[in-house]
Length: 318
Image 1 (cartoon, rainbow, N blue to C red):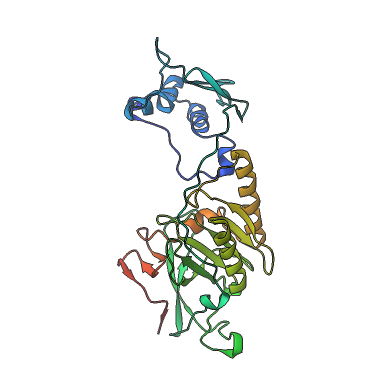
Image 2: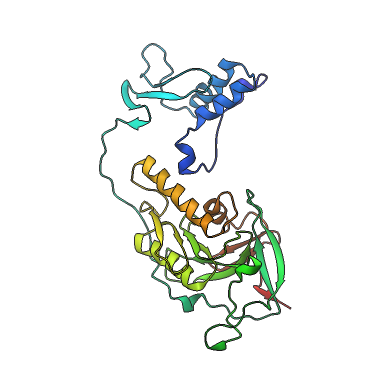
């Protein structure tokens, strides 16, 4: 930073709603200053540089500029006390002063409710090709597991290959939400869930509906809860009532107060961990399991995909 302060900016990617409650760029400023970096260099990287680089129509406190600025408690932790835009105070002590206006809720959502039978998987080989999730990582692994676990389903059908939470083997589903299509089903390890299911319509980059669960009934409940609301994130305990955060704007955003969204997201995160999930950020990890360009194994709405060979991959093998 001291050598390149004129060409640097602070940024964060994929912040959770409950993280944003505690701060954003101001947190990065505080961390930079705490390392001993020059104060004005840090402030420049957090304010002036992005305005100039992106040619933003934002005032820079010069004569004749619109009054766009924040007031902070001090220049150590940068806790924001108030915000002004174009000379109008729009927030104070974490509460908005903007007048709420109604808006349309654009959302292309054509998916229909699923039945548990639609998630059944025919075992066609002796081993199953499993995605392996690593906590805090977007890159996934691959593991071939013996398909000799819980394979007997309704009617003692040996071709109904089920999730096996005892082996940390969950069923993963990607369901196209833009048109009518059958769900794609695969298997994933690394979540650690012992029961229930989680689902989300935040699933990079196509944002189809994605879900992971320990049994088909919980999976369809979590999925159908989001079909009903037109998108969001959900958690279903075994034979329980789904807990849902609705995201009616494109299945990605909420029109509700940000503090309430943060509270609901935190509640869902805790509910997922009560199911046994050992990941630090269950919904973040889930959202990237459909991003095919990051190796290795991912699941699209058309099937299991290998990001290293850039080809579809079989679900079972010899």
